[in-house]
Each structure stands twice: as C-alpha cells, then as structure tokens.
Image (cartoon, rainbow, N blue to C red; front, side, top):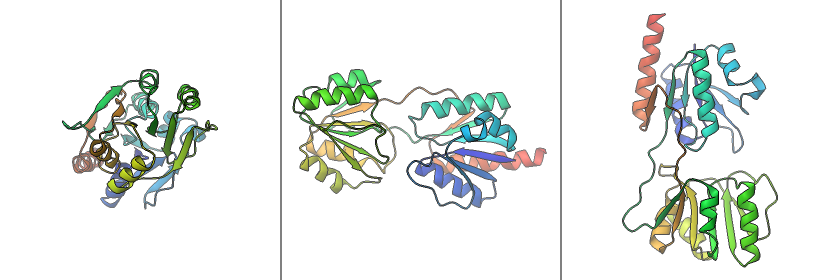
Length: 254
C-alpha cells in the first residue's frame, strides 16, 4: 500500500518528506536529469520505461494512489499518470503552484506555442531564454536571427540535447535566483526580451521582477491544458492534510 509521488519540483520533495515523516508510505519518482534528491523515503529515478511503463509499475508495486507534483508544463507525464490511474482504478491527485499574474507595471505577452512567440522575437537584439530545452524549430529560427545579429542567452539546468548555433550562449544554472543576479545578467547582456514559462512559485520569480524594473517585455508561455484529476491542490499544507486523511481512512477501511 504505497502512494507514488511524481516529483521533480521543490514542492514534490517537500511533500514527499512531510508525508513520509507523517507515516504515509510514499515512493518518490524523479527523472534524475538535474540532481538526485536527498529523502528518507523510497526513490526511483529515470522514469518508468525500465519497469515496463507506469501502468505496470502501479500494478506490480502495490500503489494505491498517485500524487502528481511534476512541473506544470510536464504535460506528457501528467497525462500518462491520469490514464494509468484510470486503468488501475486508483485515485490521481495533482499539486501545482498557482500561476504568476502580471502587475500593472509589467509588459507581458502570452503564447501557446513556439511558432507564434518566435515571430515576435525577430526584431529583438538580445534575448534571455529561460523556458527550458529548445525545440528544433526554435534552434533553427534563432540561428537565423543570430546570423542577422541577434544575441541569445539560454539558461537551463540540464545541458542542451543538441549542439547550439554560435549566437546562443548557454548558461548552466539551477535556481533559485536572486533579484541582484537577474538584474546583473540582464544588464550585462543588454537584454531586451525575456522568454519564460509561467511556472509559478517564488524561487524563479526574480527574473520577472528584474524585467519589470528594467522595462523589459516578457514573452510568456501559457500553461498547457491537463486532464482532470480526482483532487487538485495549490497549497502544500492542504495537499498534505488531504493525503494523510485519505490514507488513514484507506487503512481503516481495509
């Protein structure tokens, strides 16, 4: 009787640690691309293909519920979790931080995909890319813009999967980032456009404050639409209390 937590975020680590401490038998799953978490609970790393897929893993390991605490843009994993829990007839819950909201001083433009966003980058001189790995279309387009004189700064925690064109300078960095750090990098590279995702939370928000202070436009990807789950939370304490109560009732029912 175990609860599988699909992690990869700070919230996932905190919930796994808190639930384990409270007596809930949790398994924490992480891709392991950035770093391995230090937790006392059981941890699996590297995805579920090694176990014959998520559905098979749930069946073979006595998982009675899944808590999805992946990144808000991890659409494939969230969709797989919902489908696998349906097949196994167990509940699927989700925790996501609330999205950021623009203030009156902000200059945000929102996009659902790369093609639309890339069009609005064409005339920029120096772009700060903080939206994760770049798809092939983005790399090709940015290469073209770079040949016309545009400078691009890409910041990710994981090394880019493909070779980048000369115009893109890669910075490996893992947050959280301070306002001073974000102001410095935007000033040093004379950034005139920030590209990011609406991840929510405070650890990555400083770049938005810096863009606001410097009057830099923010090109923001909207969150993908995800399948409905049995319960959804945006406060860790509420999520933890629900899972603990559910597990207590589940044990009593058995």
